[in-house]
Amino acid sequence: MKTNIFFMYCFFNLVLTYAQDTTKLHIETPKIVAKLPLGKTYTLDQAELVFVDVLSDSRCPKDVTCVWAGQAVALVEVYKDQVLIERKEVVFEPGKNTNLNLKTLYAFKDLRVLANNLLPYPEQSQEKIKKEAYYLQLEISY
Image (cartoon, one colour):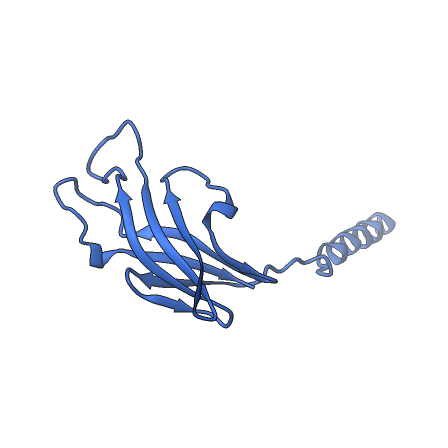
């Protein structure tokens, strides 16, 4: 009986010791989320991003049941050394997973800036969002 208890003790000790191995732990690089209001500039070391305009916003308001979720289109200009290198239209479609390349505003070496979302989201069908209220939610990862 004592040998059975001894073997059980050794077995559980071995299993618990192996379960605590943390050498295979994968830690992701932190991501920074920034807010870029309409008409403003976000400055990086290598570039500047300017949120120029909201070209359209047909996203379905939360108080309405729609057949189509709609979409919003934002215009962003990318400058490097104060020279315009790209004008990018970013399309936001609620409920759709968009290719990261389509949401990438700027990428250089390990730095990537994504346009995550256009906010605010329409709440009520009777209220139109004022242009000044719009902002882009940027995701910056290194």
